[in-house]
Length: 84
Image 1 (cartoon, one colour):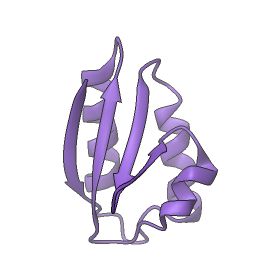
Image 2 (cartoon, rainbow, N blue to C red):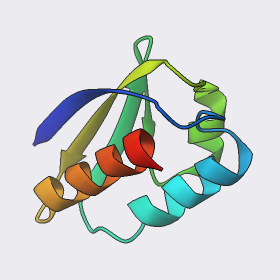
Image 3 (cartoon, one colour):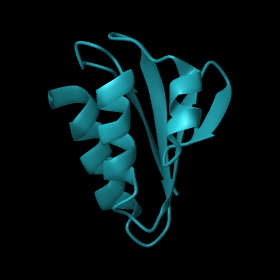
């Protein structure tokens, strides 16, 4: 299992379209992927879970990956929220 704290750099945060794109990206991996904010942990492959966190620009969240492609998944998802 790997995890990383990351600051959301997306202009709109993870709302609407970026949230859907993030979930689509997360579903490319076989690892279990989670996002944690303010003590609430959700499945990163669930659009409803992701929207429930209401993540905005500048907030810090923890990305967690556990599985066979955890390193790649974590790195790609960190890239998604910091450089897009």
